[in-house]
Image 1 (cartoon, helix red, strand yellow):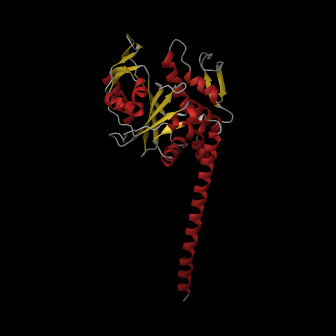
Image 2 (cartoon, one colour):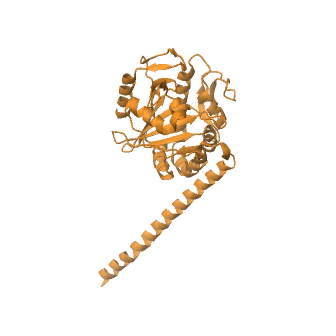
Image 3 (spheres, helix red, strand yellow):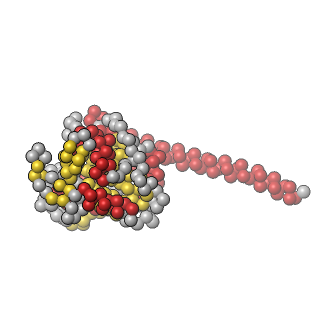
Amino acid sequence: MRADKHQNKKKRRWPSILLVFLLLIGAVAGYAYFQFKQGVNQSLKKINKDNNEANVVYTFEGQKDQYGDTNVLLLGSDARGKEKSRADTIMIVHYNEDKGTYKITSIMRDSYVTIPGHGKHKINSAFALGGPELMRQTIKQNFDLDLQYYAIADFQGFVQLIDEAFPKGVEIDVEKKMSENIDVTLEPGLQRLDGAHLLGYVRFRHDAIGDFGRVERQQKAVKAIKDQLGGFQTIAKLPKLIGVVSPYVNTNMDTSDTLFMAKDFLSDNRGSIETLRIPIENSFTEPRIKGEGAVLDIDVEKNKKALHQFITQ
């Protein structure tokens, strides 16, 4: 008789535990949604709705690559007014779901490649000629790599994200004085940069090494953000951070995809992010071509091989 009573108590206990568990999930989901909407509304108060890249509708026929991994085409647009712009920043974020790891490849915008249906041009013109889909086709044709998602970031979204995530700024060792065409003045030395100054840092290119230095600084900044943004407290803030940046980003990723990938980016135990620059060293010349100006005439095969070695090693 006692054994039956004990079993009945166990049976009654499980529905109670399940109910508490479901209530907890509901509370977490509700809090995450509230935080996300709070971030969205915060940015909507500041954004220029009439000139917002996030409102443009694009097609994108992406898929996972031949290794089963996810690649995100990340573009920074240098649009002014309503003109159709070239891509100012071109990155491929490689995400290995099994390992939860990231690698980043930066493609220099002056790389002279074949753009499907348009002949040879600087790779950044693919965006102006056919949006992210033509950029996807261009990368596939030249480097044999499929891209599943795209994200086109308005630079003001970057500023808002940094200011929300880093109230005290991102610690960066600024290597020289920088001011030309970046709307801020940066002095050399180790310091904490707010969103506007960090944007100036990653966009500066008016020195002897030009875009090479800018790509190096972009990758340096991504690593610094990752290293300083990790941990449970930041993961708890993820819904709001994604909400803050969402109005500034045009992407085919839904919020759940973004959250899933972002948690691994912010995880403490994933190590540092590896980076690659295309073109790699000793794989290009720098001629001037009529109608294009100075270009990086790259050895496509050498760079394709380097890219695939990088993402699979």
